[in-house]
Image (tube, rainbow, N blue to C red; front, side, top):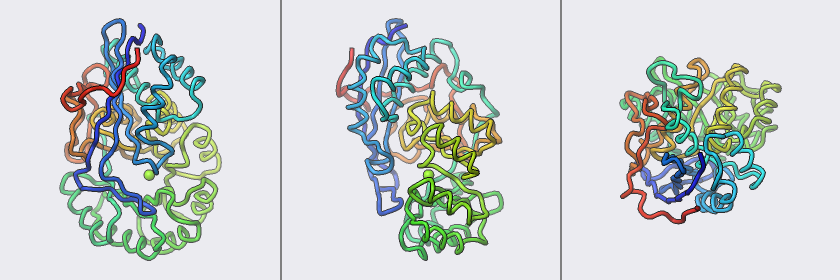
Amino acid sequence: MKISRVSVYQVDLPLKEGNYNWSGGKSVSVFDSTIVKIETDEGITGWGEVCPLGPFYLPAFGQGARAGIFELEDVIIGANPLELGKLNRNMDIALKGHPYVKSAIDMACWDILGKKAGLPCCELMGGRYGEDFALYRAISQESPEEMAMKIATYRKEGYRRFQLKVGCSDVDLDIARIHAAASELESGDILIADANTGWLKHEALRVCRGVKDIDVYIEQPCATYEECLAVRQHWDGPFVLDESIDSLTPLIQGHNDLAMDVINIKISKFGGLTKAKQARDLGVELGLGMTIEDSWGGDIITAAISHLAHSTVPGNLFTSTDFNSYVTVSTAHGAPQRIDGRMSASKEPGLGVEPIPEVLGDSLFVLE
Ligand code: MG
């Protein structure tokens, strides 16, 4: 099988809540999503998506994804989409770094592999565990009272795991946010305070002291791995690393240093489903908890997340994300939908999504 044509689309995904705020005053109201359609000489078509969390979360941005895919034309056209290891290797040789650029291409090739095999991607990724899996809800950074209120609102939609966006330089305000949120929790709920690299070390240490009586996970308090490790050594609760874990090398180092209990695997941060699955499988062997998600996305990314999450050993799957329920635009039929705070992967071959042409509009460019 050979890739004969790649069409690249751009779709705006506005947020239902209006905007999404996290550490350091960063905020996004409309996400810039890139969707790719890969056609093959055997008539099988695959779909992929990449959607950075604005241009200032990871070193990634919407225009960059599209420019990078254009740059990879010679590697992609004519390649066998079923040979995922070889294709990823060749993309890495042709374009150093920029993992997010390769994510949508790799995702679309998984869709093709599933359709060729007649199997849902999750079955090719190790097998489907159980009926469904648990989701968390991200709580955008607002006043302590508003954040606590949103926990009550989203619990009514079935969520039981809540990730608070903290990480501002007003340490007392962040401590108040965590206390207010904790006061809303019911038995069985899980609370995560994600600072998204927003605290300096001394600020993180003050927060840890201020919330030491609360059952809360602390996620990525500081910018560097070393700062996070130092904070971790003064915190006796569970600890999550996200931004610092972007490939296998820091994952292995973090495990050896006992730097974290849970890691966050975002598909595009690792460079696609192939590499995210590698990290996921290693995480299972190392006994880590894992959040399986992406930086953001619509229906296609939510479908890809669902296949990777549904094929993760349940004991190791900490949480996952239903990004398509955060945004106002639906880009595909067949995408998984949240039911009572949980989600499951499609039983159709591949990713199980059928994009809607009227929503995608005309392609921005075509490689062939
Ligand atoms: Mg995070």
